[in-house]
Length: 322
Image 1: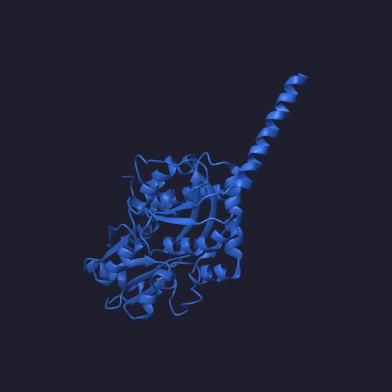
Image 2: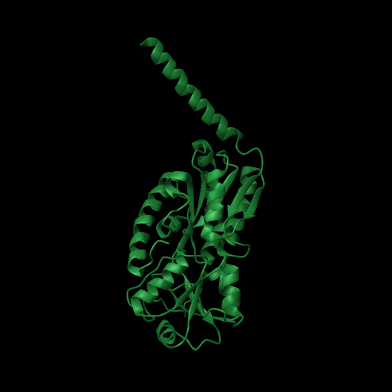
């Protein structure tokens, strides 16, 4: 028994020493951060803003790898196959989790195949945007327009939070908007500017320049309260769908499932510091997001709740697995 106790103690000490070694040596080479959309979208701009202070804190470059397509599935599958050493990470949105709810045979399970690192930020709502030449000046106008004219809305893929929002509006109002998937948000914006589609749901940072230039018009905001930076834009609840609040999305960072815990904790700790630093914190809040930085455990609990709530929203919107 004494020998077994000594052996157990030595094993535990070895594990502690290994963990300490991981945390002290990580990172010793550049980190690849995948983003499942083309340059210019919300995830891309937010990830790059976060990477700047992380590079200084970690002492290594962060190489941004834009892997768009299939609503984040391509990037997710790449992460699942990557070495679990902390040198390949994924900065993604809620669409990654939505895949296992809208696909009959999802290629991965977010809670099993990935290690949640941290919830980087949340987006309390989307702006509902139309082309400036559109006759729709409000959500009520848009709903009525969709009943007499072909109205298309864009998203980054089936099950994406933008897709779900469009279908929820249809379900709640009787609107007949038609979904059109794209490979990234920049393409969606170009489509609405060219009137290929008539509606887009976006975060303020991605559309504000076009709104200020008079090319696009914001007719409503899906958050619980009006945006502080755009106080003249009513909430959806004020503008035709009483009581409706849609918390748009979130951005989170994931690692391969077997990544050592000390490595995950090191990266999470630096993200938590970075998002509270005045300059980045201001950038995040000005963009309409709320800073995150949660622990891996908190992020995992968040994901469990999110999957449950989103499954119910999909049921209401009558979005069937494909």
